[in-house]
Image 1 (cartoon, rainbow, N blue to C red):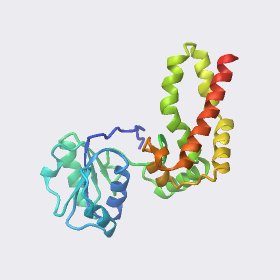
Image 2 (image 1 turned 30 degrees about the vertical axis):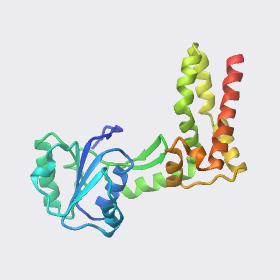
Image 3 (image 1 turned 90 degrees about the horizontal axis):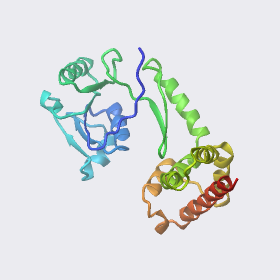
Image 4 (image 1 turned 120 degrees about the vertical axis):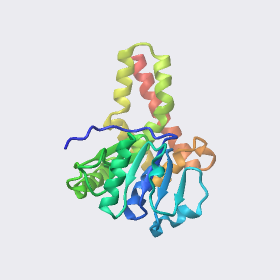
Length: 246
């Protein structure tokens, strides 16, 4: 079976998870990285949900009961993640009847889409999929991604949110722009970012980095982060100036 790779924008989209076990918890945590409106329906919930159930957030709601067909109303995506294969297949058939994409955790033949193993470095998304044939292999590939792609990629892309529009607005020659973008994406520049991080003893875990970088006022909270971004941006400006003057 060949799947078509696509990245979905789930902003303000309604997503239903049916099930409250460990797999449902993994789906939920992944969806929490988006801005989807999540509904989780299950008679029981894994202890891992406990922290989320206690919180009062608009992004999700827990409904402690059995699944009903009405739960599908208005949903964009559905995850059938119960420990009952027949129920999962029933959910899939009902969802398809309403033109809703559905993912089954236990039957690739019934599923409309799969969720690959993924590594996020900010806006950089790296995924690995085995077509549901051997998820353990997908996880192994993801672990290799983690070793090879560090926070330097996230830092670069965070700064490029502002730099790219500036470069396009200020430089008319397409060939010059391309040369700048190619240089900024080079291993040499990424290694330069790593060197700056090492000099500043900068070491954040993935979740910590997401929390720090998502707030564009990070400099008010962490002087080390401010200095890191200031120094990397200075190196970017050097490259841009050199190529423009060349």
